[in-house]
Amino acid sequence: MSTPRQPRQPRRTKKVAASTLPPTPLEQRIATLEAEQRKAPKTAYQKLSAKAQREHLEEAYLRSLVGMPEPVRQYTMLSGNRYKGDFCWPEPGIRLCVEVDGGAWLGAHGGHTSASGMERDRIRDAKCMLAGWTVLRVTATMIADQSAAYYTEQLYKMLAARRQQGVA
Image 1 (spheres, rainbow, N blue to C red):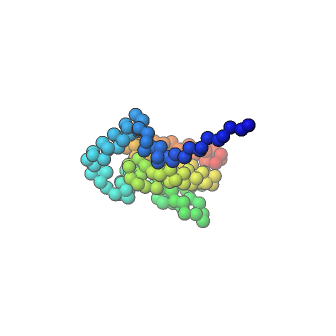
Image 2 (cartoon, rainbow, N blue to C red; image 1 turned 60 degrees about the vertical axis):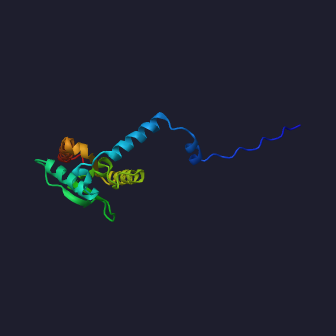
Image 3 (cartoon, rainbow, N blue to C red; image 1 turned 30 degrees about the vertical axis):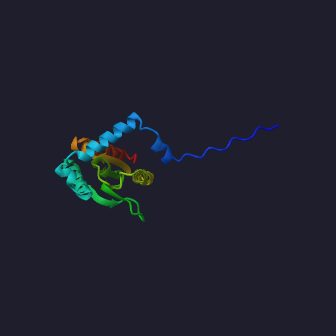
């Protein structure tokens, strides 16, 4: 003898589930922080367009490179491809590229802010590394505290030393 089946409960969608459940403490805190951020007055820098912010960041980075060879800007890193590096030293044995990730860190809506944009960047980096490039990604904070220039200089020196030794 089999027992009668219970009627199936309707499936709750995420939208229904989210609207009927009270927010968690974390969700409440995030909502509070987002509301405070919307109310906060923007600085003059934040009022600049994403393009202007990026240009400002790139110029600040370029000025921080004291005593280094001049990089090539927007260098095509892979032949037959549209990948262009922000700052490149394409000499054989060096092949160093520095990418300035401004949008994600400035709150702008640039190509680095979304998950798909970040995924695209990492795939691009991997392809460039397989082609012999060393890729360094720097942020606005790294440019401001001069660590971007420090890492660039150290990487350049390391790659140049390897080239001298014939390792590259």
